[in-house]
Image 1 (tube, rainbow, N blue to C red):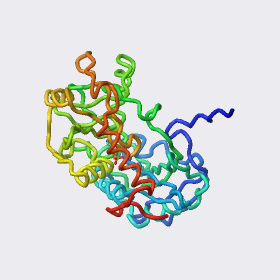
Image 2: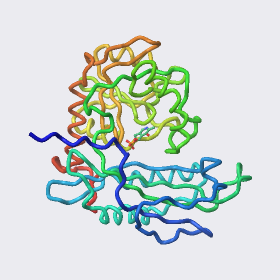
Image 3: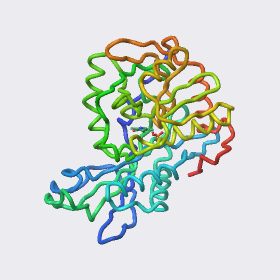
Image 4: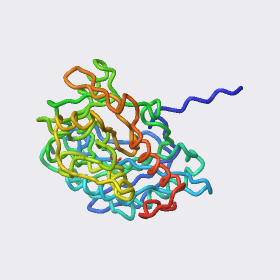
Length: 335
Ligand SMILES: Cc1ncc(COP(=O)(O)O)c(C=O)c1O
């Protein structure tokens, strides 16, 4: 009998190659695909002091016929350009970045796992101007990387129901930067998330400053029940997830009424008495919540399991991504 090899933790292994471009003197250089190796950076680089950085995360899937397809890459590139604008960093050129991703995937084609795995793509933009006096001056120069990582489950245990702490005090970002995918937001979530893990064995924190439900440290949040989906409407306080958008589209296609508006912790607790809750994101896909922890007390959601509506929506999205269901919205692009 053979034992299955344990999968590496999400993001812990990179492919052999990466793609790199530089922005100098007001223009982007041509890009190179080269072996992943340490980079040379001045210790005075803008990013190291003033956090001028943003990134993206999306997946490419190997289909049964051997072809490899990116999932909604155009939306992720758009969001990266929007993040760069908000951080006053040079905006990546959309066509060049798409070309970097495709060229990198072709270069590491043999490292793209078969389903249920995928290749996770991680574009990264950093301000490289060496000037420790530039606290209020943007970085004139920048570097753009695309890294890739073969991935399987994000939450170890796959479809294990999650334990989520409701935090109605802390915020994960400045109010105008929630929609920007920048490292500082993840740094802000780190302390509360580790505390929740230690104190409550929680998987994630749901940030609800002032009682308003926003999102978790690395995923959006949705409430589900028969024929109805409720999620926060888009504003600058949280990341506009591409998975969120995809799931909302699939829900509408399935005849589910989608409601986007702000809601608070009290309404959420009322909803989960007989409804479901789930986290959505590229990494999490749609992960069911089994327990919400509110002011130290466990609140069981969906009988403590992953609910049937969550499972159904997740399965529908995954089927499209893997080429097992029709791609009616043109989300997949061949590499
Ligand atoms: C803070 C945060 N919210 C939401 C998401 C979900 O975004 P997407 O569905 O585009 O991956 C992510 C990334 O996965 C995230 O880091």
